[in-house]
Image (cartoon, rainbow, N blue to C red):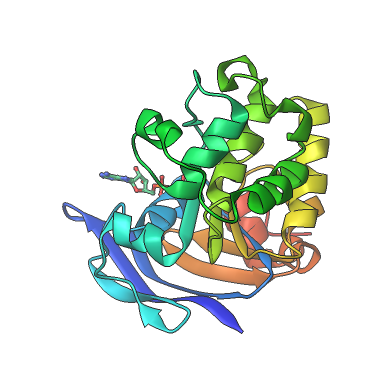
Length: 246
Ligand SMILES: Nc1ncnc2c1ncn2[C@@H]1O[C@H](COP(=O)(O)OP(=O)(O)OP(=O)(O)O)[C@@H](O)[C@H]1O
C-alpha cells in the first residue's frame, strides 16, 4: 500500500527551477534512500514533503489525503516526522524527559514536566528506548550523551509520536564506525514496523539499509530500484558517479 504519493512536484526559487517535475511513491514498511549528486534537490524535496517549503505546483498525498496546502505544523500532526542532521534535543533534560516531551507534544518542556504522564507513555517509552538502545541511559541528561546517542534520541523522539512516515537527513553524518554499525542494526529493525525516507550520500551505508533507492538529478526523478540495479544503470553512473561505462 502507498503511504506517500508525490506527483509532478515543481519548486522555483526566484527564477531558478530547483525541483522539476519530481514524482515518487513510497510503499508501506519500506526504507527508501533518496540519493543524487550535490544540488540534485534532495533536501528541498524533504522540505516540500514536510511543508517547510511550499511547492510551486504538484501534489503530496499522505495515505489518501492531499497535504500539499497544509502548514508545516499540520503536516507534522498528520504523521510526517522528520529528524534533521543537527540534533534538537533538550540538553538539560534527561533522556526520559525528552521522550516524554515528544510523546505529549507539549512545546514547553517545563510545563510538560508538571503534568501527569499521559496514558500509554510507559509502554511507548519502553518500546522506543529498547529500539534506540537508550534503555540504560534514560536518567542521563541529554547534554551528556555521545553524538551517536543524541542522534538516536532524536529519532526516538520522532518515533514517540507514531509517525506514518519518518524522514531522516543524513542520519550517520559525524558518527564513529561503531555508532554507524549500531545505526544500521537499528534502522533494519525500525523498518519492520515503520516507513522511512533517508537522504544519504554514503553508498556503503545505503547498501546496508535500503529496500529501494531513488536517484534524483537536477530536481527530477532519474531512476529507482535496488542499489545493485541502480549502480549498474549507465544514466546513474554518468550523473552520479561521473562515469558512463561500468
Ligand atoms: N532557499 C533557496 N534559495 C535559492 N536556491 C536554493 C534554496 N534552497 C536550495 N537552493 C538550490 O537548490 C538546489 C538544490 O538544493 P538541495 O539542497 O535541495 O540539494 P541536495 O540534493 O540536498 O544537495 P546536497 O546533497 O549538496 O545537500 C541547489 O542548487 C541549491 O543551491
